[in-house]
Image 1 (cartoon, helix red, strand yellow):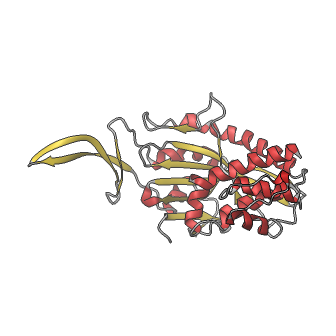
Image 2 (cartoon, one colour):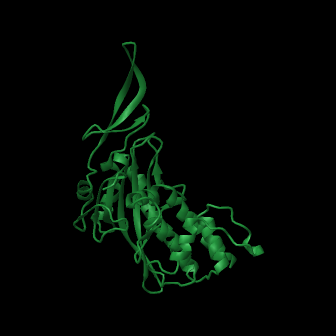
Image 3 (tube, one colour):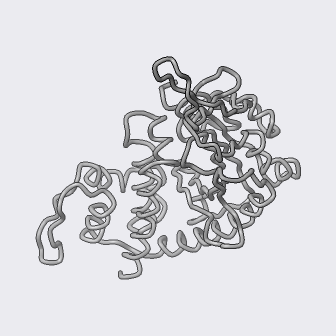
Length: 316
């Protein structure tokens, strides 16, 4: 595997990113962690520096992986580690009850990002056969400045296009926690209920987009907004927009992407051209696309693409 992905395992069909080793379906949480080689802990170790032979405590700590003493990051004395086993405990009772299935898990950036993806039962279909399934993404970063969080992650089956939504819209529910306190697994479990509500909201947006048509001008404007690179001219004044290379590619794939037969000429088709490009084409390789899709610029780009598509569809 390439350098971003350290270890990874998946159950069932090969996932959209094509990475990892395949394991049996319906694994327990602990078995999935073992298969993905993330069943390790972390520990803080005091850091010292030498001044002319005098050893001085720096007041900082090295965060180390216990299995191999791998240095993960420098943290403060108040920074509370969250063990992978504790973070993944939010899944256990739901997996045991058959409400979730462990799908994928792994480690990125030499252990700095540990994550797990669980499949929920919720799904919806547009045009009868265009199915989107609901997943729950757990992220446990072993990195200063990053908190543990859970996200709603719809995946369109026909093309494996993904989105990733924060669950932090309900003030009474914790969908993320920082490292200034001990990890509260019970508080995080409530986010699973919010994920179901978030998925229903996304379904409503998808149905709306599937009924609204774009035209050539609005489609170019849309891709120019999502994939900026040049200063767009005023298309309403009849001037040609100079598109970035990614925007030009989006215009090429909109009619030929997997699932393009569903909702031809609609904003649903336009949105999926963006998610297809970011998940399957843009970036150096598969694992850089995986990291960007869930943790980097492409996660934000796709959320912006959804919001922009809704705005332009409403104006149509």
